[in-house]
Amino acid sequence: MTTLTPIWRNWLQLITLSLLLVVVMEWLHLPAALLLGPMFAGIFLAINGRPVTINKQGFSAAQAVVGAMIAHAIPPSVFGRIAADWPLFVVCIFSVIFASAILGWIMAKLQVFPGSTAIWGSSPGAAAAMTIMAESFGADVRLVAFMQYLRVMVVALVAVLVTRLGMGAESAEHAVATFTLFAPLRAWPFIATLMLIAIGFLIARRVKMPSGPLLITLALGIIVEDSGLMTLELPPWLLALSYALIGWSIGLRFTREIVRYAARALPRVLLSVLTLVTICCGFAFLLVKFAGIDPLTAYLATSPGGADTVAIIASSSHVDIAFVMAMQTGRFIVVLITGPAISRFVAKRLGK
Image (cartoon, rainbow, N blue to C red; front, side, top):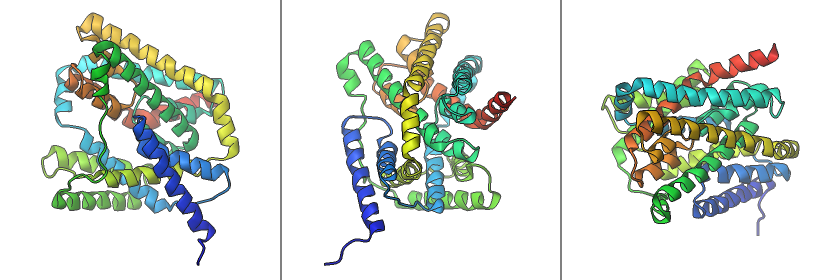
């Protein structure tokens, strides 16, 4: 009987542990399970000296798929809603971004994490995109992922609790989405989507811009969807594979020293996350007081990140879902555009 070589044995352990963690996290209704499960599995293998190498081109292809997914998730109606009440959206979006930048600057000043890492990790929303982009701009992607996904889990938990208080436990339970890995697939839109992803990937290889596969495919996806040329078709299994590649790429870079460092910083990072959530609750109160928005809509709209979880909760609640998703999407786009500039600015100020 043939025995597995060490590299294949490590791969088998990585895949098995990833699947187990994803199943447990999905059962517990934890957010971002498809990325966090593989990431935690990668961390476990890395700190136990069982190396597995993820091809850089596979990681870039996964970025391109995530870019297409984000483009598909942004409905054209969002831009019309933002345009109708643009002063309100501008104030709310930039208030949350400013508050998160200040908290990131404080964390960097206190040397909780290095400067640009603290800023990227504190960015309010677009966790997967921020984690992918951070590495291209010199931040420690491992610590950025730690900060971003800790915030996603806290924000999701608080959002569910607020919904329970506002609508009762039964309505909150219905806010959990069911996940089907092999959903029905439309063949021709799927083939066209793969072609668009391939084009974005190839252009990114030529222009060599930071986070190019994600950003270029995102731009192409928005253009073709909003112009009505095509509707992107992204089956859950493709997204699951892409999230796994990204999670493994991040997790396998961890070391025992980084894990200890993150564990020591956990109380201060958690305090920063809870502070940002509290500040956003204050912004929600102002929306209720001066804009006449109902409390649950205001809270979900200003919630700092976890847009997919917020979307699930909002769709099952008696809220203005168009307002909630317009605010979340608007902030996501602004964070995506301004993230690199804010990171460089704060890092430069800290350097001085």
